[in-house]
Image 1 (cartoon, rainbow, N blue to C red):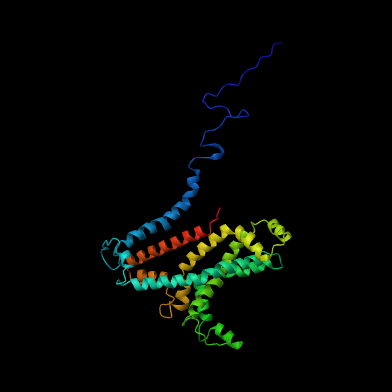
Image 2 (image 1 turned 180 degrees about the vertical axis):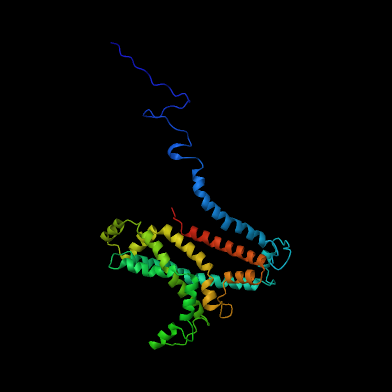
Amino acid sequence: MAVTTTQPPRPTSGAEPAPGGRRSRGRTAGIHGSRWTPYLFLAPFLALFAVFVLVPGVLGLWISLHNWDFLLPNKPFVGGQNYLDLFDSSSVQFESFWNGMKATAFFVLISVPFLVVLPLLLAIMLNRRFPGRTFFRAIFFAPFVLGVAVIGLMWAYLLDPSFGLVNGLLGAVGLPDDTAWTTSQPYAWISLAGVTIWWTMGFNAVIYLAGLGDIPADHYEAAELDGASAWQQLRYITIPGLRPVLIFIVITTILASANMFGQSYLITQGGPGDTTRTAIMVITDLGLSQYRMGEASAMSYVLAVFLSLIALVNFWALREKK
């Protein structure tokens, strides 16, 4: 008896059958979904980014080109005059703005090195295995959970020259108990830097800990077998392994310190004199208290340009050299 075979019918839609006899689906169907699926997931973020970043950024640039006063019925267009005034020594805002920039730069210089080095040393210690390691990690990170208002008010009382706990403890151990921590220099800067370091050190330490976890342990074991000291392991294994994390921490710490406002506003009120009155304080006072939003917006964009240049320089200096 003859055996006859029949060929499976060819697809009529023009699409070739997939391997295994299954027909392939369209390019925008199947496991890949619609071509609009990625945009659907991005939509919430893009909406928030547009509302809270893009639109305010463009509007702020537009305001900086006008004499924008809430008390004026009209907002005259002045072009780049608000920017030129910031570089004209005879203008009203020149001295206050650049004094604020100097105070900001000084705070960055005295706080950022400690906020980069101390958290690294802390992370190296907390990365070791010892009883209570998780507890100590939580203790060091806990201050960062508190808001700047809580931190500022708490330390304003602790550092008060008259009845503050800090002077009380110093007097109890025989040290001077009349230090003006918030009303004289250099103690005002020491107070602001110390409070900021205590407050934010735990966050940088946690970032370092995450980076240390990605460095293979056998690198350290091989270094110990070769007789490498702790300093050599830090220099040739830890630091190179943390290079991406280090770039992130340096740039974000500089930006955060340059935008310092709450600590100075609540603890020293910008004093003594105007020595701790940062650029953000100058901008806030000019725009929200004096209603001169055009000049304040120009100041903010000049500050943003400086911070962008500093971030680029740090990224270039810390990049991996081939």
